[in-house]
Image (cartoon, rainbow, N blue to C red; front, side, top):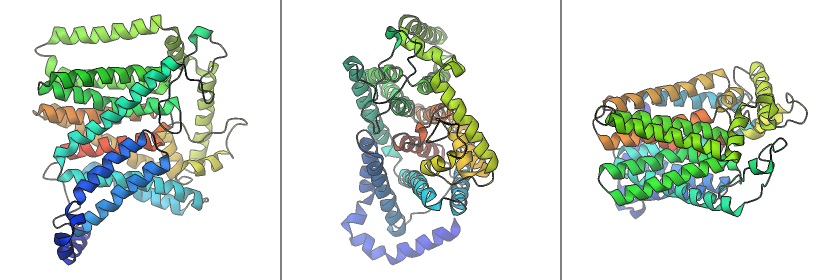
Length: 442
């Protein structure tokens, strides 16, 4: 990092006069914040291309900032070195891809996501006070989708494509799967979006509660519960698993404050949640049928499809284990055609870790998993040791979101959609910023 910081010091010195006399550069932090928040709001109604374009504006503004603003420096934490290694391996994989032009499109998407993460890290270094505003923006978007999806359930929206296997279901067991306003319309995408964002809304409720803003806490809790209900209305079974991770994570963190002095209340709440979930499964036939289909194995067409994709993807990985086939779903689809079983075309591996291995090879997979493990470990240590309740809530919300998205990603492909990616990398940047220490090496 020293070489890059020397270059930055040189460019900042040369542009010192410009920086001091430019209204644009003097307010560039505000513009970066606006562009960051715009990414989240655009995610609710805009196409992937528009969302990505706004994110690139954020990256562009950040590059201008670090080149011109005096005192801006680059630094990294241990988990970010894993991420840097992952990115470098992706570049090598791109160079060796047999379908370079298709891989380039996928690489540009990866560059946009990681560039957005880098921009957030750089912005939050000196603007930690804006983290609640960023989290609130995500919370508003999640709440909007919760309301939209909840209303769709009562409107009994029709399926745009075949979203569930109804061949063995009675009419009352067929679920109206809601999909919100996210594009492309897909209930699995909405379910994954909720998995990424619901911890944030519960975190906002907890934060308001700690500062005794009971009205805001009540509204936030109500919206979080509504989003949870709407998540189950998506019928996305992977998001059901993700929601279990969220609930487990919230109870684990709350035990830090409630177990010693409020053990009975804590156990009562846990028991109440378990009882409510059990009652919902017993009384709502469509939900029960959807949950039980998770365990139907090959008897459910969606499960059977995924097993076929997993088998073919593993074969792809075996043949391209070193550097992969090149990043991107278009590239994946072209190569997958050589391995797929007839009639089982797929856009991805339906498992984010298998997907990374197939696209960029085993070393990229190791680097990405190393990034996740190190970030999660550091976040857990922070939660256990920190005495600042507000900081613990923020890191907990980010950590639970990261874990839930990762677990959901074991069985679905929506992780690679921008609506989920940008929240995921935002949570990673927030967690990293909160746990950063003075001994972070240059």
